View 1 (spheres, rainbow, N blue to C red):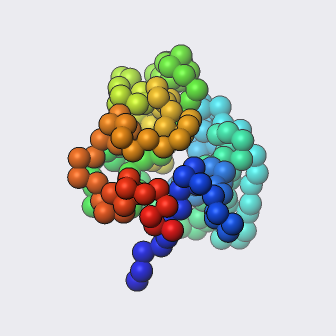
View 2 (cartoon, helix red, strand yellow):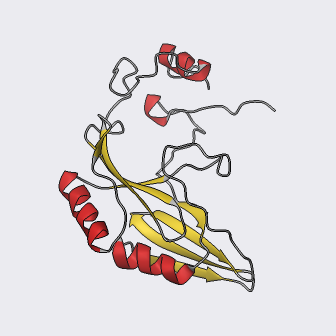
View 3 (tube, rainbow, N blue to C red):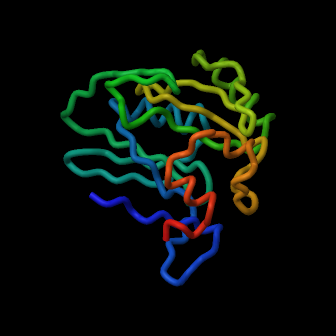
Length: 188
């Protein structure tokens, strides 16, 4: 299997380049759609914007920004084992997914969400300072690890600066990143 070509849209565009506009949706699985709607719409305030249903599943989409949704499948007649793991802690039962981070505009919004979660009886961490982002961590009713974050320094708000140690702190980057650091169009 060959590695796909990586294109960095902000490094310059060429005819035929992919021009991303964010994440359309992330599709997750829930064992209980009613509890999911109550949590994401009722507690977090994310509006349900569309639903799909077949005899095999329900698929509900929650808006987290313009054209940005998180969607859940609830498979009918299937039993799903409840599984919960903390964010940032490896567990071999979930090797491909760690957590979902939802973006907030500022520290005040982060603190307001934390208070709201605590008032609803949810376990939520203190605010964690990651340098470029501040975050809190909590879990949804289906066991999915969530993070709410705001960018203290937004890495998407200007040209990429590979020399900025605040954004590029890996002292031993993978070969593909090292190539991009030498030449932003190296992988095209």
